Amino acid sequence: MSDMFEKVREIMVNTLSCNLEDVTMQAKLQDDLGIDSLDAVELNIAIEEELGIAVPDEEFAEVQTVADIVRALEALA
Image (cartoon, rainbow, N blue to C red; front, top):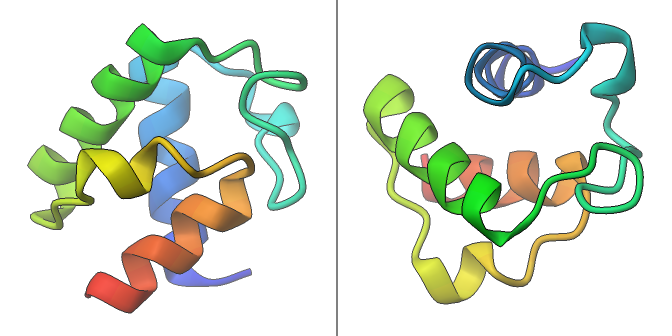
């Protein structure tokens, strides 16, 4: 697992109270983790604060899985 995944996973657990075991690369944000649009905004803000990487809102709106978030952040890092 990548360092970026571990960081995103930690942020998701701390910010959205997701279960650590549930946050996998394949996990679908809405279906598997129950993340709604407000949670997604909160998550994006937390990622920006923790990692100093801003994912444009339009791009963040397109992500569907944890892997999508990790790939977007790695591309912007």
